[in-house]
Each structure stands twice: as structure tokens, then as C-alpha cells.
Amino acid sequence: MAVTMIRQNIIRRLLYLRNWEFINIFFLPACLYSALRSLKVQDWQPYVYGMFVICSILAQGVFYWHLKLQVVRKKETALPVYFNRLFSLFKWTIVVLLSIYPVLVICGPITSFIIFRVSVWSNAIFLFAILEYINYYHYQLSHDNLNDIRFLMKHKKLRRSPLNVDLQKNQGQSRKQTAG
View 1 (cartoon, rainbow, N blue to C red):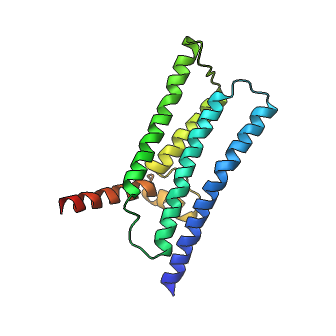
View 2 (spheres, rainbow, N blue to C red):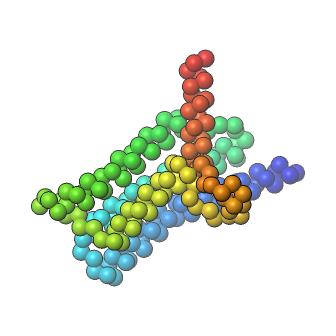
View 3 (cartoon, rainbow, N blue to C red):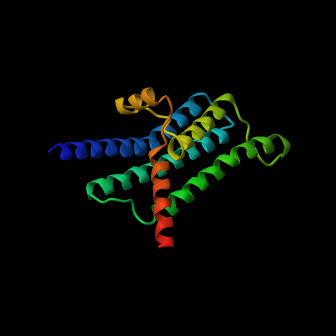
């Protein structure tokens, strides 16, 4: 009975994470569009680029939480075989996307064919993309429930993100399989 309750709580949490990340893929750009339009921002490219990176990370998050949900629902012990390779590729894709922004910032003023005029707000969106990357692929930065806050207070440090833990775990399993 207790195991069933714990499992149901985990399923509920994974549904929450997956569904809210999915909603944010549409909600955040809609808010950005509304703000840019109402403020009549002309140089919108840096804002849109930063939001594109954020939404790319959120889409990966939706897929990750969905895979975790499937593992729990089907009472499996591991993520799919393709998980590690695919999410390692996703991780490096985001690193490349994050690297492009500063290049565009530097090249914008020195070339006439790149219009990429940044502002404090477009840089804030880009900073949010960096934080979202760290939150998914390195350390858990979001603390939206009591368990997360308890861990932070008890250990006085950030915990590794669930995706990071799964990538490390699956990498170790892949090494064992190729060695054996």
C-alpha cells in the first residue's frame, strides 16, 4: 500500500514537471511576443534567439520527464537504451546554441549583414537560457517543493540535476556493457 502511494506521488510529480514544461514552451514565447509588440521593440532578434534556446531546453525537458514517467508507469528499471546518446547530443547542441549568442553580439557591431543589437532585457533572457541549461544538465537550480528545499537546507549545496544523474548512471552502465 505504501509503495503504491509513493509510486502515485512520483507519477503525479513527473506529470506536473512534464506538463508544465510543455505549457511553458508556448506560454513564454507568447509573453515575449506580447511584450515586444506592446513595447514596439524593433531589434527583436536577440530576444527571439534567447527564447528559442530556452524553448529547446524545455522541449528536451518535456521528453526527459516523459521518459521518466514511462519508466515509473511500466515499472521498468532503466531508461531506454538510446537515452544516453540522444541526451548527450541534446546537451552539446545546447552548448553550441549558447555559444552562438556571444558570437552574434561581437559580430553585430563589426559587420553590416548581422543585425543583433542586444539590450539588458535580451541579455537577461539569454542568462535565463544559461540557467535553464545548468538546471537540466548540471545542478538543480529550481526548488519548487518541500523536499528540494529540505535537501538544500540540510546539505547546504545544490544537488545534481536528475538528468545529470541519469546521464552519469547510464554512462556507467554503457561502459559495463561494452567491457563485458
